[in-house]
Image 1 (cartoon, one colour):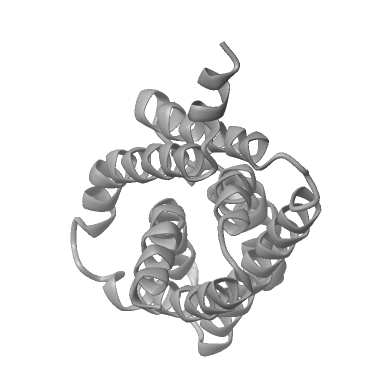
Image 2: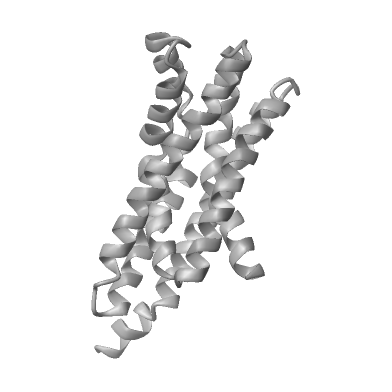
Length: 203
């Protein structure tokens, strides 16, 4: 159980690093308690959509008869990890564009769309291969941890907004942290499903 919780924290933490910077931008614009509330709701809605899609895809892929084939999904987070390491992962322009277009009147919708649009492919590419490796109990624990971490992420962004330089620090180190975790998870999924061993045995 402890291992499942720790792994869930690491996995969500990898996807949350880029979101943290985006949330800082939202909170910098928000002025009222209602707008703060809308950011929380929007973050949850966007995250639930991505988790729901990932759960559905993981459920469908569980019907693949050969387990080693599922290990090939590990190439997805490895790809995203290499992409982040080489090109970075900056989505600040998306937030600014959405805020300019919609303002703060529809903040729930704006935050949800930004979460889904800017983080969708990465999150699904990371969650689906990971969910496949879990049994029902581990999956339930992971989802509970994710729900708690979503709140903690938004709360931390709100509280740390006024600390000078925090955004620059996150941007500087999140790229490499994300790359390492993504690639590490991909390698784990490949070996967990005995993909390399099976392919080698064909020759």
